[in-house]
Length: 495
Ligand SMILES: *Cc1c(COP(=O)(O)O)cnc(C)c1O
Image 1 (tube, rainbow, N blue to C red):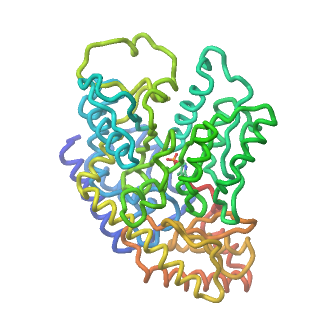
Image 2 (cartoon, protein in one colour; image 1 turned 180 degrees about the horizontal axis):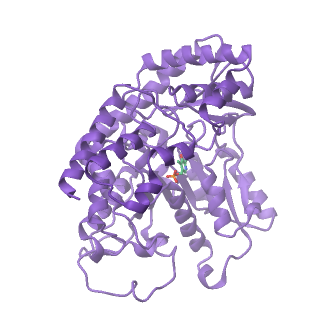
Image 3 (spheres, rainbow, N blue to C red; image 1 turned 90 degrees about the vertical axis):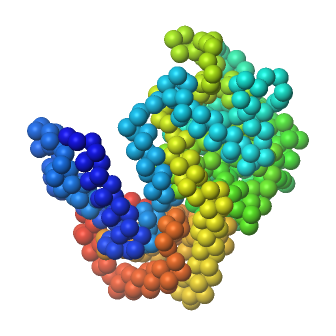
């Protein structure tokens, strides 16, 4: 095996895949039965004989890429993961080959330096004080901090652990006090409820916050919600706000929520996994007005900042709160040492941790922050234009006006019809949509991630959806789609 010639084969295949995806050549998605893919890729043969190199590698990659969903394709509208900038992809390759698991400084000084820089850069965008360099002593009393994790779900868990350590400082010795509560709107990502489960707080610790018809938090009703928590004999450990929500992409009013949390002394957590990136745009930054009042904020770079999976940041206004989140010791890793850098291991669930910062930094370094800001404005602007176009169609309906790059809509017909339409489009390999259940109805959901999608694609989408709606109405399209797709595609369940 020659690394150089094999990597040339890989980059050539990927470059072709990337450019063809951008120019909409071929299907956006190809759903084949899993056993067919296993056979076509000759996985069992290669596993026993080896030899995945040279011409065999090229053959394998061609087959692999033919069953690979094309996130850069203009018809890719399904989920919120980035259509990664190729520089980020190369960074993932660098990290994969060098494999500097950098949670402790000595295992990857360059990767740790990048993470340190990226965290501070993100803190600055929120308006929080960056972490001083280890050699700057005694100048900043309180400052922000953070860590990169493998995803927003883990980041939400980490932030809630920090919140728990503040209200229950001896939790690592004593376990959960049993009277804790977390308040969150029902539109919150499922990882919030899951984190509460993982922490052993129990489902009853989760209190839904009052919301308006669009699912946005009603900040003036927070005092009542907190009173209910107290009546139940509980203490509010944290209050979660969305910036923006996953389902329909709306922002909660952060400044008013922040004021209510300050008055009550409650930890405010902002889940900005998807939408915190609006901070990079002059036009949309106001959506996050008040984010600086939070105690913690989660921000995924692998969603709207074009980094490949995964690179998520958990950021706190007061770094000490994150350091206290994991008050546990492993003597071989955690000890005082004289070193010129910093360790991240005491702030994270992970022990071995990839050099995630590079995946994002390579994109930032290529585009610059203005370039990233323009991308966000383009995608948010496209969703707004698509909304106006779809709303003008007599047979279409949108539940809310979009505030981000997420747009929900439905065409005339039942809930089941919306799902059948999505499945039919996937079976045809065009217009990969997701769906969402919102306000008691099923909607089709488009997330504009690809920089190649235009309003002309949206016009074609409207026509395609309309055609499928007529077929479904006439009967049979749903089942035909299922037969072609191998099995019915599962609705919902988006990251
Ligand atoms: C995507 C998302 C998450 C989960 O992040 P992952 O990186 O997919 O684990 C959490 N919250 C919100 C609001 C999200 O949009």
